[in-house]
Length: 512
Image (cartoon, rainbow, N blue to C red; front, side, top):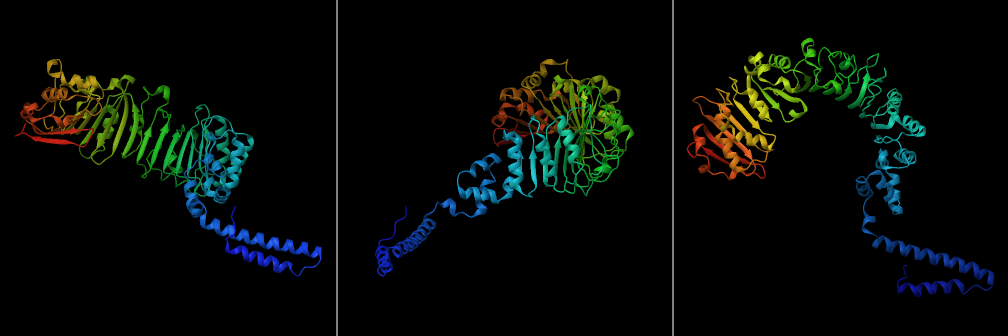
């Protein structure tokens, strides 16, 4: 309670006496006393307000904009809780629609009531709606969502039948604010028919589309704003780039050899990835599309094939100079390799192939496809790949990286000298740089020294010496030149690099 200052008591008493001294009858006295009390109460309230303004909580003196910025760090449930703490916070929360521009159904038990509150308080603000739960929304929630479709900015629905039905309705309305649409419908027996009214007029801001199996509209109108596309491929998607003419990143799932793909890629495409239907992934062959379509190389492309030869021939025919290859055998136990072909201009083709296609037999069928212009080779997981490449000549190879993916592979490398003549080195007449990367495999320093000693067993240089060997691993930089005098026999410069912290050492041939 706020008390009057001491100097105000005399003034108050004098004012009361002055007001009462001329009153003669009791009725008038009551009225005068009521009036005086009102004046006194008003004076006390003014003084209390002035005191509270001067001494109020520092948080309450902050500008409204700062309160809003703080509340924006909270999830919707936290904002609701904060708005119940004080009248000031509630006023701020209710007066700022941007605080209510997102709704995640998984955060609430009473979906319908929470969704209604968000729609009411967000007013006309663009909305981000995430229904990341298998619980089916009520008919009332669906009606509210459709009624506010014009305010949607992001829509994320789960993979189930009701979301497919809801999407059919939503996509047939005008969605002027929609930027992101995500609904991976998993039932491959049914496909969502994209409506004919999809166009720049109805979806002018749509940028990212992620959907399950779809059918293209019967009448195509361009949606030029879309740059990211992830779809379950239509059986006929020849008009895909008519619908999305400026798309940059494209992923198509459920692509079989029978799928009708666009004859040409849009010039805007920077990434094109194809995935087979899950049960067929080991046997599906996307190379038939490369042979029949007029596709060009893009920075990132992915296919699935039983064999590497056709994609390799297609890729090498479209590169004007040397190219590199990364063979990732890390997942060999799953029956597949990832082979990445990289051109010097930055374009790349990743081919997921059956593990049986990387064998001495397949390489010997068309050795020129494997070796003629190959200048850079990286092997992730080396036991299988090095064994396959043994005794093979790679005439243009200048850069070779060996990256064991398991500890046993590193130990296998260090034991290679004792395995001759069972293992024969890869013939690399122009190799200049060798990288031994033991970042993944925990190779100790002693074993690293043994691997260095095994280099002439891994690669056959003839009477040449390597320009550099770059050894990367744990504690590698502690090696001393006295630990490896043999390196000078086949290397001009040795670079040692630790991975735990930035530390490196360089020895030239006159030091090692």
